[in-house]
Image 1 (cartoon, rainbow, N blue to C red):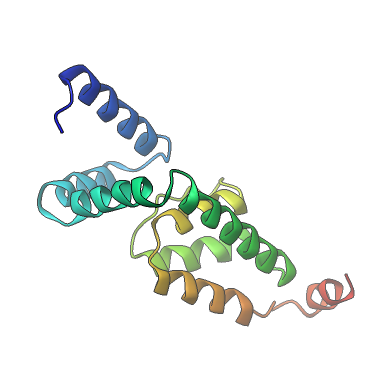
Image 2: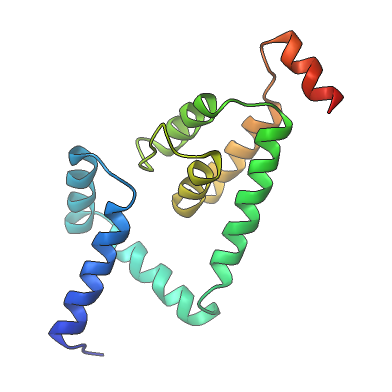
Length: 145
């Protein structure tokens, strides 16, 4: 199906706005451009869009929202600090997603869940569940609550 040039330009602007809203670095943008040209990213994006058409526009997003809520509860229950979460997410995501240290825990998790493979999500969940606070006082306070 062909689309008009103006519709295509509008769609490209929307995609760029979504990418730029994550505040990527220049090197991350360069890597993204490279993946779009030579990698599988364009193919995976097309597959995701076709999935939206097959299964309904919001079905995947609802699941992501539930996943983020569950992970956020685990982070808070286990008393994990945001800095520790950022380090874990960055190590699991191999350089992405673009996470700002000033982002909220929910934003960090949302960004990760949007882009992570199922195996990465399972590893994150396992890591958060196995997390132990290093401060004995804080661990005691967390268990009391």
